[in-house]
Amino acid sequence: MTTTSYIYDQAWPAEKRRLGALCLLYDEGTRRHLTALGVARGWQCLEAAAGTGSVARWLSETVGPDGRVVATDLDTRHLDGLGANVEVRRHDIVKDPLEEGRFDLVHARALLEHLPERTKALEKLVRALKPGGRLLAEDVVFPPPASDPDLPVLHKLLGAFLAGFKSVGADPYYGLRLPAALTAAGLVDVAYELRAPVSETGTPTVDFQALSLEQLGGTFVAAGLLTTEEVQEGLQRLRTPGCVLLPPMMLAAWGVRR
Image (cartoon, rainbow, N blue to C red; front, side, top):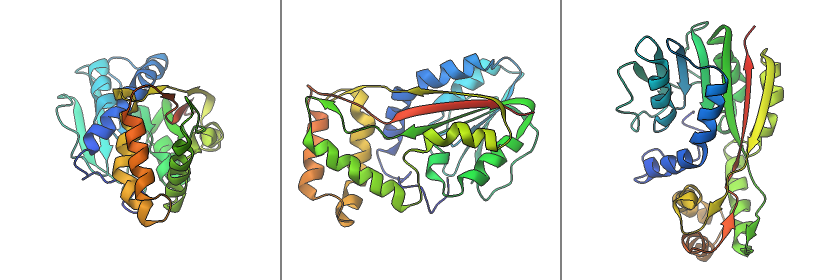
């Protein structure tokens, strides 16, 4: 991710916990897709924008000592204890060079959606693949403000996140554009799947939404997107049990380099 476009702050005290909550929602589906792509012992893998390293750690165990995982991020403070066959690399996917034709697998989750230069970044990820290598990209599709029972404040919160994303050049619906983007980047056998997890307020499944709001609430208030009272109400509603709602959906798209 670039320093100018990422809306979240990696130095925020609870950022590792927020990223861990994202893993709780989406890691199981990611592992399922990677397994279906055939990740095996000895593979060379790139995990771009590795976050807390949960996927890199799983890849490390899957490819074994004869394989290798390169885990990159613009800020690597949350990447530790990932395994002897993991190289952690501070890396800006837009600006920094990346080996070409090296990897059997490239995976990037919740990366391209944040980059105004996402086409350039995707092309670089594709070039990093060996011929026959697989790329799995996963990006969000913002959900409708639907919940049971209905939470009127949810409509205002979603509007603020949409405006916040767009203000820094991020695309809250980029997941829907991934299949066409992978094809345009030259991959073949492109396929895709949308995953729609469900959160329950007052449980760990809602931590990703709650911590995202907690971090960005002040920014939204300063921009006039929410009031302080609306942020406080939103956090209170998310932390109170008794409601089911949709977190961001995740569209996974994958393809093969010729």
